[in-house]
Image (cartoon, chains in turn yellow, red):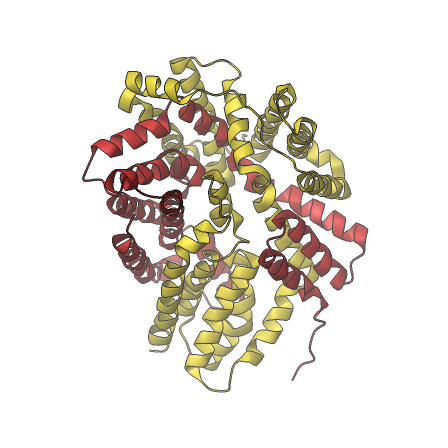
Length: 313
Length: 220
């Protein structure tokens, strides 16, 4: 059965190819640092199972140390010039959009087809496996159709990866911080403190404390999923539902959405807010958060009013 | 009144807030926060290293989507961004606002059907949406500044986020709905996913109205 291990091996090989590409790039100003960075990341994916918890922890600290020294840096990945791209556009026109549909198409087809073929793909990982399969198919189609040099996927992948830079490992590291906060019991402490912020008997104050707590704790954790059990356990369930008789469905469903407003404001939600700024080469790391904060604040007000108006009918 | 728990584990949150405010490298901030909270909770240094390593290893799936970068790069190499921009430059009806409005609706509806992975910052925003909105903005305002172009690109990324966040919760089997159901169940309250996802619809409509309204007012 195809599951996560196969996908991790594939990802490890992709990262490893960037290490090789960096090592071969003689003009790269941080050649060894960059190659070590991608090489360590590849090692995590290919051999992490054998490293043990402490080994993986040391590998992670080494990765961060390399970043502080300037890894992965930016080299001269071989790609096409603007003139070559315009010539390709003149030749292929709108057909260039077709390969862009392969990955979404495979993701869509996989979601429906894989569950019908039991035993082929791990049912819990259909989405990620489909993504990997889509990437493989799209690469093959592009190579056969446009016939770029054989090293092109490696070089082009490295070009984009260097554009994103150290932000690439931030989402995975933040997920790990969430796990460490759980070990340290951060959620339980916040859940114990939160109810003290509410004046007795005021329904509006209780609703505000709940939705504000969801948003603020989500901003700090970067993830509404981490905030939900804490705030629902600390305020939502004991105060709003059991104390004031609110509808648990409305409190839970809309409370989660109030947390999502916090995600739009959080630099800790790196996948959504920091990585795209790097992908789009924006000089301001917080440019995406700046673009979405008014939407986030207005929707938070909307969600707060929804609970206040509809949970206590 | 119950006794207060020890507050030392919260030191990690303080480190995160201060670190991000000072714009220190986020990787270093996160590692420092992990050590702060871990040591604050009474773990030893080797225990924190092991806990971090274990979690980093278990969360590898978070980094798997990067395997799409070679494909995106190959498409860019063939001129996908240039073709996307050329198409928009020729289509006068496609303004920055209308492109982003259509994308917002598309992203919300497909996410509501559970199709969250068919678009994203690497898959669609960088190769298609950002060059298209930038081309429309440049066509309609030839004197647009570098700063203005960056604002338009940031808005493209923001629109993707708003679309997926306030569409996906309408889908029954999404992780957040299952988390709410599981939490309430453990407290003895049985709810059906459909009851929860219905309550995501008003906010989805409000998100389209609020963010769409901001897009309409945006001057490239």
